Amino acid sequence: MTERIIPIVDQRDPLPLPAGGAFTPGAHIADTRGRALRDLRVSVTDRCNFRCTYCMPREVFGPDYAFLQRDQLLNFEEITRVVRLFKALGVEKVRLTGGEPLLRRNLEGLIGMLAPLGLDLTLTTNGSLLTKKARALKAAGLKRITVSLDSPDERVFQAMNDAEFPVSRVLEGIDAAAAAGLAPIKINMVVKRGVNDTSILPMARHFRGSGHIVRFIEFMDVGATNGWRMDEVIPSSEIVRMISAEMPLEPAAAHYTGEVAARWRYADGAGEIGVISSVTQAFCRDCTRLRLSTEGMLYTCLFASKGNDLRALLRSGASDADLQAGIARLWQARSDRYSEIRTEATAREPRIEMSYIGG
Ligand code: SAM
Ligand code: SF4
Ligand code: SF4
Image (tube, rainbow, N blue to C red; front, side, top):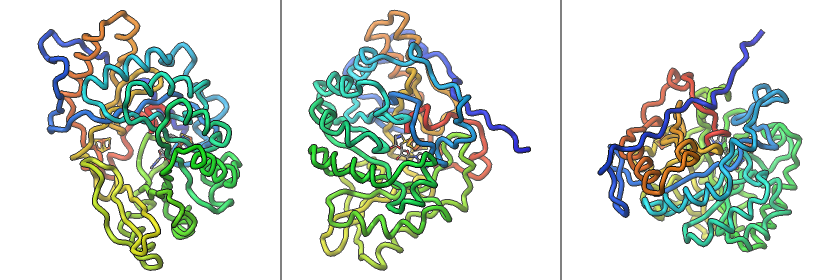
């Protein structure tokens, strides 16, 4: 009998309040490696209607799995307050994620509350509900969108989402998002050797010339339940070589420091692709991201084994200044660089699941 894997979701420390004087409002804050705080990822639900094998394997996230209950989630007012405080701390970009963010009831209501803050506001989705929601999301103030799609091939896609979800519905969702004006759309494909590597070229061919940007992501050892092995990772360099052999590519400059995807453009002008080499070419040096989980825990790294409890402070009547000071102190103490020190052994260490922490 195989050992049952228990996902970890609730390791936390309090978010301590500084004794005073640690943070001047409006000041730029940097962590111990000199990295500024610029991006916030906000998870709005830990639930999902897919069971992607690399993220929420069905044998772990089955019918008995205890997802968060409503009163545990940050509500829209709490999220908006926190995002406003983060803006004052230097955050410029906010990405809503999950779980599947479009499963959160009235997500467009939250977007409508966040949009006036004037941040670069975007969303990552599996696309399953986009046909229904794209126009409302745009009308509420969403600027851009990223859709995950692991293969244009029905059999391969369904084997990966493990929810019998047809590829045609995601493609329709992408079209609906483009029609609603959420373009240019980024399309994330996680590549696993022996599972969907035969879909690399078909994906590139399918979206070449569409204006959408496919980003090939190296399979990562997020969480502790996806059975990650190094030999299942296809290095981005191999992906670029493979595509370039048929559709020549040339490197393109990054849009900004800290951009996660390395950009490549088609030499004939038919658009661009991106590769996210989190395993083979770690980008911790420029990592300016902080994650806020669905229940208000803060994580300074995607591979964290513990979060810091912002919700407890929020619900204990802390002032804006106290909350900002606590966040600033957390960031100033940050030294994470997991992807730079990853080994097969570290990949087996316990850590929080990605669907909980927010992808
Ligand atoms: N449900 C939404 C979706 O799939 O787009 C948002 C959340 S999902 C956790 C965010 C992103 O993380 C997706 O693009 C997904 O493919 C990626 N992801 C999940 N598990 C991964 C893994 N083990 N390695 C690399 N990327 C992963
Ligand atoms: Fe759901 Fe996204 Fe994870 Fe797939 S990657 S199981 S769609 S949260
Ligand atoms: Fe950032 Fe952690 Fe990923 Fe490094 S491993 S890039 S510190 S989230």
